Image 1 (cartoon, rainbow, N blue to C red):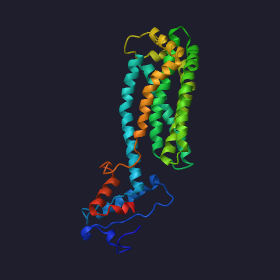
Image 2: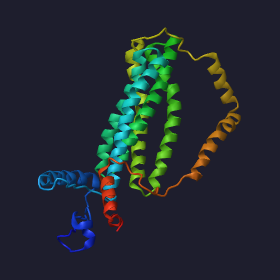
Image 3: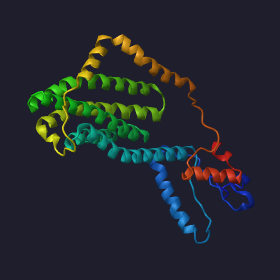
Length: 321
């Protein structure tokens, strides 16, 4: 650290001499995630001790490490808040689709289970390095989406097979066989996308890649192994908690006709469906990777408040120096 007590530099004192500025020169080998909470706990205790003599005292941490740490933490909190709002809505939609609470809960439980297992695996992977907090965000977001999506497919196949007269065991095998092919194709595609991020020299993007790879593999394994086994054991109990009249679980004639058309004319469908996707992908040329000018940081963030304090003191260039 460097302060007015070490060097009589006017840069280290605010206008009028009322503010003492202390500059942290480095964090050493420790990561910001491990260091900043301890530093803030220490400065918070010191601030409370000085408050009686200096009522307006404010001790805040800022700089590149602190800003990025706060942004990651706020991003993680926003994702957690979004998930809390999304889970009840997702359950309601599944309940509307299946018409029974038992069938609606299974995909949701599969997604939550996948997230728990993947997070446990990432804890072990974290021992090999210092991944970004974005890894947790990716695991929860992708795990919830893929876990529900894949489980939804397996449960639907199981109910269709049971509706045609198959036994519980036969229906579970058929669901894993037919639904498993779709899940394998989808999962491999997702894995390729995340694997491409490993080649970028960025801790955040590589953390996203690792989290995405782990959660995708876990959700695939749960959908192809654990879920069919649970369905063969639960059987018709998935119809518990029915909220509306049961409809025919077998696919309708319209969907069968559409599937036949897609498989019969794959190139025609590819062109028609691919053109809008290409139009969306072209928007990538409009992306800007430079940092937005102006004050765009969240106002409640401690490191952002400290940056504004420095700017008001006319010392904003200290952080960039």
